[in-house]
View 1 (tube, rainbow, N blue to C red):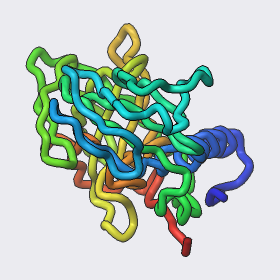
View 2 (cartoon, rainbow, N blue to C red):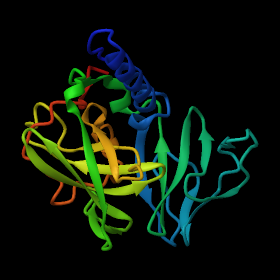
View 3 (cartoon, rainbow, N blue to C red):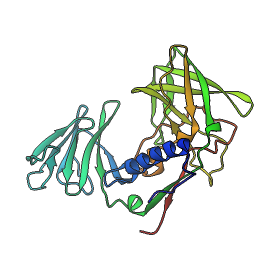
View 4 (tube, rainbow, N blue to C red):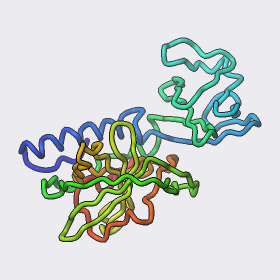
Length: 261
């Protein structure tokens, strides 16, 4: 059950629908919180805990062998043979769980998604601040020519292009956040001045692409927790050094709330 926030105004009702969708995405049987393992593969075949067969990397592909008696199925319901090759995002059904290939810069990993993962089972709600239209600001987008270096939570560093700066006014001062293009929108990873007991160390924001005049809206009520807030097996990007706001953003999601298993 999700923590409910706010009165039934149009603004809050729309925000609540967003939170309902977030809860399903996070807490569903195969949702974000169900990630139980990410195991990086090499050219040498290895056993993966909780997974049948032996697995290895073939370039950017996860290859499993010895699966004839595993009972695994492809997503179309056909049984897996003795061997299988999975490219990024391809998935097998393994009992009531899933196996999914994940690739980072050409290196594949096998991810095990388990509805019985301890943190998913104990997850009770996503604590969030009450939505407030005052946290919706207009930003101006300025693209940059140089790529940015992004550190992920496991220490891996990667370079991303197609970046830019969002400039906006908040709490009486002009502030800036670096963003990158992500699908049909922009991706922002930021930290702020909220204490660690009040909100997770950093959060994500997905504003729309800028319009013809270079403007877009930043709705901090839609700031959301990164996947690594729900499982230690993600490799979330961390905020770039300049994406640390010196104001407390008391909007959006705060923390996962857990109960006893």
